Length: 130
Image (cartoon, rainbow, N blue to C red):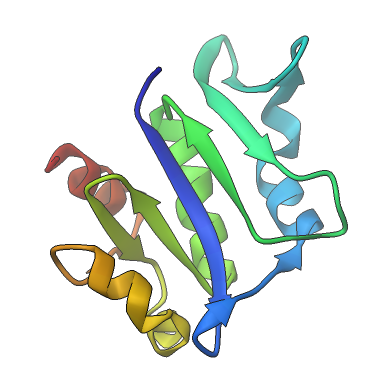
């Protein structure tokens, strides 16, 4: 099992959802269905195993073994939705306006406050700091 990064939607201190079409507009052209999972491919480059619910409203997405292009897409999604990007050792937000909506109990679960990322490169640097 490889490294995994997730995006979880929050509003007003509790879980929330957003329209699946927002995520699909970002990742849809790169999703390829395999037997029991979805993969992200950018050209001939594998960029991870993608998890997304098949509903109109979703609470987030996750990517196992994310590549650089997949992280760019995840950053873009985090800019557009009230959400927190998480990985086992940390978390980040792409829009500071969303910080008040994150549940306190979740923030307390991490050793450091969320990193504020201004672009996909910032997100990659945070993940490399593991």
